[in-house]
Length: 478
Image (cartoon, rainbow, N blue to C red; front, side, top):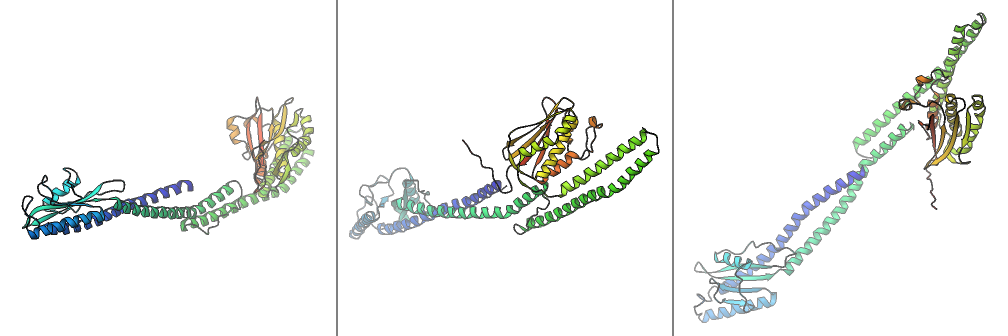
C-alpha cells in the first residue's frame, strides 16, 4: 500500500509546487523587465527634455541656443552609448529624414519589428510601458520610445534599443534560486510524505500481520495500539478485543469438547460392561447384541478421537531440528506388520537424511494417521510409498497409495471433521483422523495437502519448514 500511496502524494505535492513555481518565475521575469523599462523611460524622458527646443523640424535651422542644446544632446547620447552600450536616438516624425541625434553614428530605425511599433506608439503620444516579455532563452533587444512634445504636438521621438543580456542573466539567476527552493521544498515534502505514510500505514501493517497470525492459528497475536492516527488506534483496540473474544470462545469450545469426551467415557465404559453382561444371558451369535457392541466400540473410538483433537488444538508445538527422513523411515518400519497383515506393500524411498524444524511427536502422530489411512484404503497386492524431499524453504513427506482415490468434490472436503466419503462408509473410522493431523501440523507451522495419485490412488503431502523462527535458508550455487 505504501508503494501506491507514496507516489500519489509525491505527484500531488510536485503539482502544487509547480503550480506555485511557474507563476512565481513569470512574475520575477516581469518584475525584472519592468524595472529595466522604467529605467529606460526615465532616460528617454530626459533626452526628450533636451531635444524639445533643439529645432523646429528636420529642415529648420537651430539658433545659438538650439545649437548648444543639439550639441549637448548628441554628447549625452554618445556618452550614454559608451557607458551602457545602449543605442539611442532622436528621430523626426518623417522616418526617411535624418535623425536629430543618434549614437552610435549612422544608426537608423528598422521599418518593421518592435522598434518600429514603439516608434508608432510614441508618435501617438504614448510612452512605451508594456513591451513584449523577453525570456532568458531569447536573444532579443528591448526597445523603449518616448515622444518629444512641443506646443502640444509630437515633433520627434526618442528611442532606446537596449541589449537584454544582463536582464536575462538576472532572470535566469532568479529562476535558479526558485528552482533550488522548489527542489528543497520537494525534498522536504518527500521526507514529510515518507514519514506521514509510515505513521499512517505502520498500524495497518501491524494489524495485517496480526490478522495473518491469527488466521494461521497463532491466537495470542495482538496489536500494540500506541501509534498512528486516532481512528487506527481505535481500530487496533477493537481488533484486540475481538481477538480476545474469539480466543475465549475457542478455548471454551476446546474445553467443552475435552470435558465432554472425558466425562462420557466412564458412562460409556459402564454401558459397554452392562452390554457384555447382557450378552452372557442371550444365545451365542445374537445379531442385535453384536450390533450394539460394535456401535458402542465405535462411539468409544469417536470420543477418544475428539479428546485427541481437543488436545492437539490446545497444545503448543515443541519445535526442534529433526531428521525428517529418519523419522519417516522409523514410522514406515512401525507399520510394516500392519501392511504385511493387509498384504499391502509399504516402503520408504528417498534420501537417508533431510533436516527440518518440527515437533517430532506431533509429526510422528500425523504421519501415523496418514499411513494408517493409506493402508485402510489400499487393496491387497497394491503398494504404499513414503518419500521425503526438499522443496525450497520446506521439507515434504509424500505418502502415495494405490487405493480408489477421491473425486475433485471429495478432495475439497477431505480433512473436515467427521467427513467420510459415501463410498467408504463400510471401513472403520470416525472421520477425525485427518482433522487431528491438520491440527498437529498447524501448531508447528506445517501443512497437509491432498492430490490424486497417478495412475490411481491418493497422494498426501506433509510439509514442515526447513528453518526455525528467525532463520534463513542459505543457497549455495556451484
